[in-house]
Amino acid sequence: MSVKVYIEAIGAIGPGANNWPEWRSILRKEVAYQPARTVNPVLNVLPSAERRRVGIGVKIALASGLEALAAAGIDPSSMTTVFCSSGGDGENCHLICEALASSDRMISPTRFHNSVHNAPSGYWGIASGAMLPSTSLCAYDAGFAVGLLEAAVQCSVEKRPVLLVVYDTPYPEPIHGVRPVADQFAISILLTPDVTQGSITAIDVSLEKTPSTTMESSELENVRVGIPAARGLPLMQVLAQLPEQAAAADIYLEYVNQQSLRVKFVAA
Image (cartoon, rainbow, N blue to C red; front, top):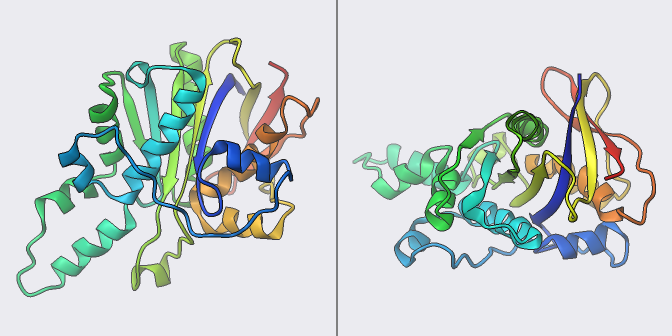
């Protein structure tokens, strides 16, 4: 069984590129990829008190999501959302562990508040005024594919647009030694149930036992395998070539239980 939806807009931020137009130029080989640390985005959509409290995970998640909706000209308050991350805010987790290992074991209320897995969803609601449902998921390295399938099913069944936001941030040492995440990365994709004037392509998604699609560039492959959210790079690669690329081969994104999410591209 497959699920068909339409892709209308993309937002992305990660090592070497700060937004989707920059990633698109790299993936189209119009400019050479230059590895560099992810630049922390400025987030002005939250009240000043909230801006002081949020961590980098919230910043990159909201920045990429808002970029996708701005490209589509859609009011963020009107969106159903799906957020997915393998571990949330890695630095916040590290600081809580440090506090628990100290003599007084006192945890800052702000740290605890930001430790919950749906923190970006909550800050999204504050920033946008969105009142529609929001889902927060975690699936280790398979988060991008799990999030995409969840968002596609919601979009198809509920017959309304859904914004998928997948993000990851690294842990400091010593957690980094056992769960290495190379850098920050976030990708957001706006899905619609029906074709619109802004539709980039239609996709059919289904589960198969097929090896994951890799990146031709060794540097981009290092990004893909080094950051769970960057498992979406093969999808970004195809979307960067559209609409000039008349036909795109199916891609396979790492899922759970030795399965892959097959993404078949259909002309919009």
